[in-house]
Image (tube, rainbow, N blue to C red; front, top):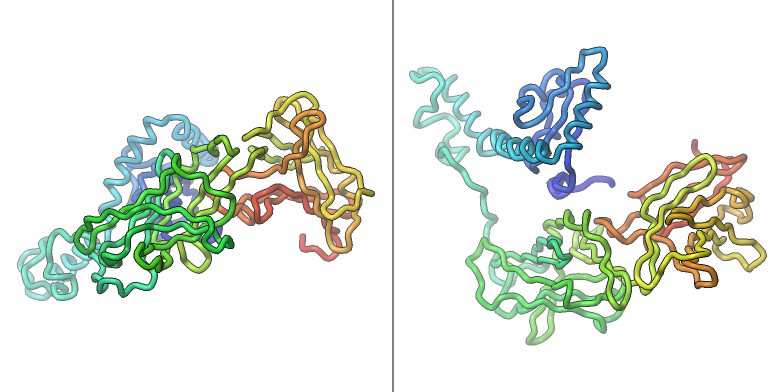
Length: 427
């Protein structure tokens, strides 16, 4: 997946945090997971985990020095992954316990420590008024809430900060900072990239604006819009002169997409995924396919590539269904590789894909013929929380003779098999 920041949005997608270190000076990973409400299974290694977790209360500690430590860790994973009630109880307790490590709490402990060590202190163990770090930590207040950002002057933010979350029904909730908007800003605009504004969707901002430091919310209703396939850039728009400012992605929450399947509409299978672009802006990736076959599972085996299929839109798996690999750019002289579909599963053989043809590599695009005589439908994966699966959903390679075969997702999230010579390739 590469680096993710902020990490909390990714932690929140999980069910269990598994930490199997031989040693931890502290364990920031553990605290991050607890903060997101995840129960943690950690090895009871020196030194951090046992200082952070209370076994059976807000997490699970597995002895590291036992001869059966690996089996004990596996048993703990099985117990926790198989018990939703236990996960919920430990996760809730973990979130409460994580408050001990919030910046304000740590600052107070440092202030108290220095006060106790101050020459002439007469109250060991208690912070004394007038402490050494009082000026640095805001006067020694016992409770410090989150510090609000300094309000920006009205309308001077070139790219307002946006927080986008996927709701349970797939709708997009876009929140903007009140102080970064003007009275003239009336809508959140999604604009199809490359259509020059011909394809656009608008969601109204409320006319009544909260105080600076609060958030203004617009909702792009999933039921109300059918978005053509592609990428959509986001803006805040002024209806008077149609001027717009592109939105920065301050936070993108996609957790709901983990269990939300592509929508089946009259137009076909549809999916929306909000994401942060490489240059930090908020965008939405959409798919809309009249016929679609989802690669629900892909396994690289000894005899071939096993693919589990799910037909969507107008596609229906019936008698004579087959998985087809077609050499990209072939002029018809190279036969397709075919595999029968049984119980929504097909095993694609490596032969004759192993017989290299191209100068650099061969690319075999995968299709499904839903039934005998039906047109081919491209095989891909549009469900889930990733706008771009290439480089994230990766598969092991299979070596056959002098070549290496590996399935991968293309830039359009469709499935292809690459075949390269082993000679000159890194192992």
